[in-house]
Length: 155
Image (spheres, rainbow, N blue to C red):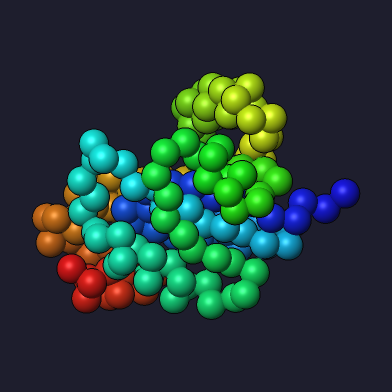
């Protein structure tokens, strides 16, 4: 049975080539992807919500991809957008250990399962926190973020 629609949550501050690769891989498996930008009251993102949303929409103009923002529990947003599964990317065993615990809690709360996809080895070192640090110190992030000029213009 094919998965119809999955929910890919994250802060995406910024949306990196690693995130992009996970979405591209998932498009070969599922019909639709809802990319959910989480808004947390305790975190202050570097890039604005509108900038992040615009950047992702520009990367994926497909009707098969919808970009939304959400607050609260990820599983509640998944249910609200009528998604059958959560989608998460894994770079390494550390990600797996962290994501597995969250997946078990989400499954216990809602019955929703998590689909894990491995990040391409060539992209496994890319991390949004590190990319922000590079950018904040006037470094070039074009190797890590597709169309990074959209993010820069949005600031």
